[in-house]
Image (tube, rainbow, N blue to C red):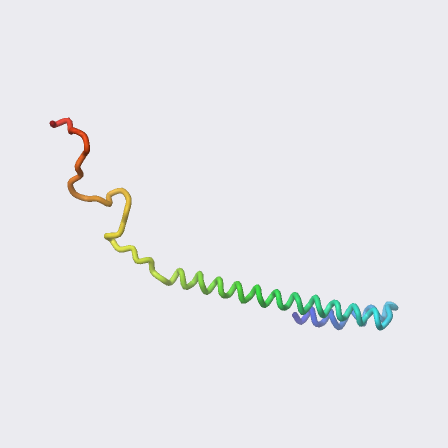
Length: 91
């Protein structure tokens, strides 16, 4: 942002040196100041959004997922005797 402030001061001086009127330099200065202010606001908003997103991700990583040994699902989830619906070859 220091470079933006520097350019907002430097551009009007250069414009006046190269023959632009003081009014034109003043309008250019106001335009540059407006663009600089808008960029600064957007940059701050982006930084705040990024920090809050990083904080949320960090909190998600810190909270353990409570999957105990007995809450697994899928293959091998049922142990013990399994009853088949049809007749087995031994019958």
